[in-house]
Image (tube, rainbow, N blue to C red; front, side, top):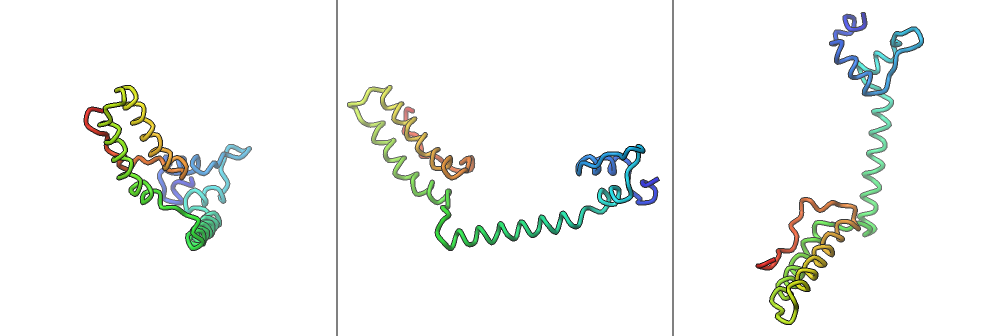
Length: 135
């Protein structure tokens, strides 16, 4: 009946009901309020979400003004050149055994990855320091 009255597909309505956690009442039916929430959305929840987003934005802006934020991408880019140079020097160090060079190369990669880990970023969009030839 609600499907016809609200002009919505039954599957769509059922999907929306599940998505927002609405269950049938003891009588096996949905309340008009629940149906309206599924059809039209919950304006109070949307307003609350908007207020939270504004508060989050303000908190980020304030943290940035206080110098509490680090641009992880810029930090990784700044570290990339020296790390690549270190890897190149390690690769050409004849006094090191191949296993030692490989281990040091792995340590440098761990250092690079830790920049992102500390910042809570996965680093998947970053370019790590290039491995020297032969590694």
